[in-house]
Image 1: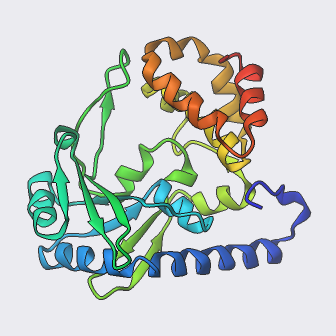
Image 2 (image 1 turned 90 degrees about the vertical axis):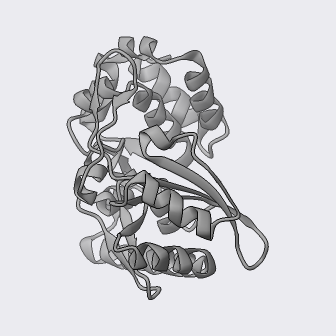
Length: 261
């Protein structure tokens, strides 16, 4: 499974697993062609790029893609809004000041896909709340590097003709194969920017059966007090997801061993 410890496997085995997982992701994404192809075509026609990103890519690789699809694009929110108005069954813009538009699109089987498209961001944080000063970015790489963990920082470029390319500048696939949570930048910086990420680490340990990188564990133990900046609602939401994960004991142990509990 995804939490398999890598030391037992040699390089050839790991490479074979990588190819299997990528092939699996490919076929998972192909199953969504009726939803993805017209959306990618609309962005292409408007002269913009569209990437499936984050948890959606991680879950596609793990063969567990749900009906929540996350995208990122170089298109600014007003352009995204116009494209979605044409394409989706329903659109709402509650997150538009953060560059996010949400929509629902029914696939050919009548299943509602929840779609979220966010313009590239290159945020800075105020160090008091977890709310970034939203700055739109111009590159995919800049957008990926500000994400919480490398396994959540992989992307798949969707082309207008239905082709797709796997894009992984931060080696999230290596981390996924090793079953390790590591941060794109220094973990101290990442967790100071948004302390909720510390709880998310415990939640992903529970959901995915992964371990955390040693430097992440160190940062978790050093920055526990920062969790007080997070509202109780956000904390509760993470704990709910953690307790419902496949390996809840591992998540709870992580909470206790780091002192976050």
